Length: 148
Length: 148
DNA sequence: CCTATTTATATCGCACACGATATAATCGCA
DNA sequence: TGCGATTATATCGTGTGCGATATAAATAGG
Image (cartoon, rainbow over all chains, first blue to last red; front, side):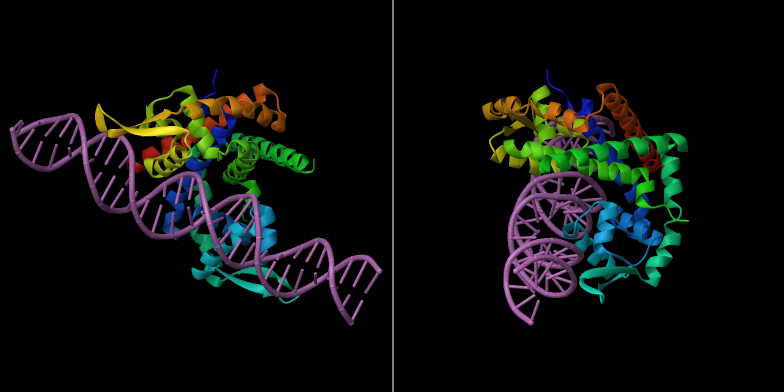
């Protein structure tokens, strides 16, 4: 007896994440952002002026992913990267005027996505929380295993 | 008002998929497979001798992703790639003896994962089906949008 | 005060994903 | 039968993710 990919919850996540990223790509193409770039911009619209590390803790990404991504956003003129004078190890990420202006141009995205999905908000919220619960369990188990 | 990534169901999927892939990476490292390679091998253990296209339909991947991945599996000696004599456009993927033998070495993986997650099977099955439902809705909406 | 350790970010290499395009084989139909 | 359309796979370029490692700044302990 062999499980097939469609039976596996890991594959459900894998293919749903791809479908979601493609749905976002359709909407984000207009404003010139990739989906991970949009996540970073979303985090900055909510709270500007954070360090690379603080962004990484929110998005669960390391500097090896964030640094090149942030350099591309800087090259696009959406953000500025500068060393923190208080602690020269840290790099502060701040939105430019263009980066702030992009928020309005992306304001329709969550609504368009919700419309594409077509499920009641309560269902989405419940599903989101269940998926976060799964993530938390996986990360805790990994933490525990690495401390063995 | 700005949604933050943790509020967004897309980010729940995104981070859960990363956590899942890392959990698998811990287990698959021993047998020398990446997580996408494991998905392909799983599909082949269930049904050997399929074409690239048939694998792609099951895993929802295109040839631009599968071809290099399959070449790496071939270089590892897990599979053979050969043109279908019936239709020279198609490439048949068949397990080698080593590829079949790997099934036994990977047999513990689903159990280890379930243990890491630590949720009842019924919950996992329900969650899996809800996530598949979300994927289906996203793909249908994309299909509909592209036909506009 | 001076060095060992820790912390924050960056660099490198590899393996995906995927849009766009290329190539070759097969099919459809006049 | 011939040829344009379709199908199956491959190639190319870009952008992630991440393990491993490097580098530089800050901290801690003697």
